[in-house]
Length: 236
Image (tube, rainbow, N blue to C red; front, side, top):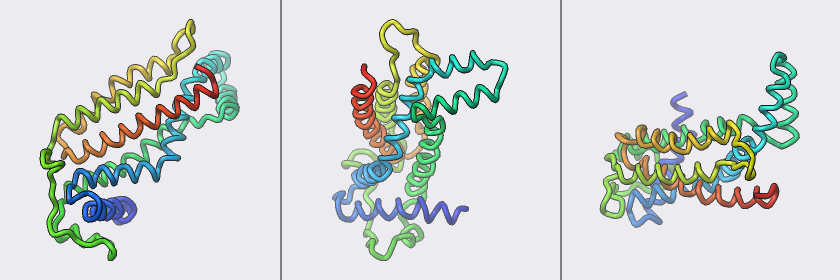
């Protein structure tokens, strides 16, 4: 299992990072992390785009979900069948958020182990034949931030970016409608998730915070375009 994880996640990310470091990042580890993060997000864009869109649609149909749950309160089978028909009608996958989480966790762990393991002889043995080994690794981002140590400013910026993305991802009911339970929960999570980010990343190397910051900023831009698309399709 460890071997598979190393071959599927750790080794490709390590090689891409070193390739960018050697060729496009002016030997700055922070810039190499930014470029690697952007590449990952562009490759996985269809999955993240679909997942973010599904979350919005899931919130949009919550009033209908609640109505079905009330109609079939005593019959679990009919309730499940009616919900599945509703999801199919609106093209909603209720498991999309879980898929997004499953995708993000191993990638973030791979970044963590790349930084945690360091850049010694043992680590460079993981390089592919076409990726050259650098003489040294400059762990300072823009000559200011030591990416091997925690940095609260980077974590705070990552949390703020996550907050704005979460706010954009909230489906707001039309004026006069009572906010659904899903909308209320989404509003609460917009505050809770950034606080969790600060708590989780507080003692981790700031390289992980930089990855999360860039990824969250990418999500903000992506969410904006998703909102524009949904607004044209379904109205304000």
